[in-house]
Length: 156
Image (tube, rainbow, N blue to C red; front, side, top):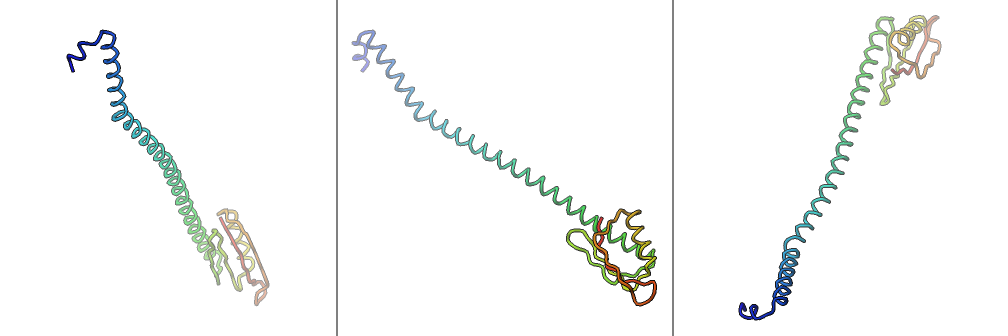
């Protein structure tokens, strides 16, 4: 083969070497470089997908933390309201016949035969000293003069 190559003219030798070099380059490109580029592209796509998922997970984690904090605050608020009501009813000589918290943070309280002036003072203390608001209020005369039956729904 070397003898055959040596018998060719200079121009033919350069052409053959160039052609074989080009074929060798194309073979290396096709066998090694092209698959590497395809793998690289696939990995880039996977990386982009993972980044998008990471952003989604971080957003969901932040939402979870906010919701968790809100639930804690609502529970604390609910517990605080219950404590305020318990303390102020005792301080105002009122006896609750019904105490029913609701899911939205309201508390329904019922008094049977409560002294009207004690009840009004209790409401005043709740609203002015503890920033408790009245959502619903129903007052009807009680069994004796000065006594009332009251149903009240309060919230912070």
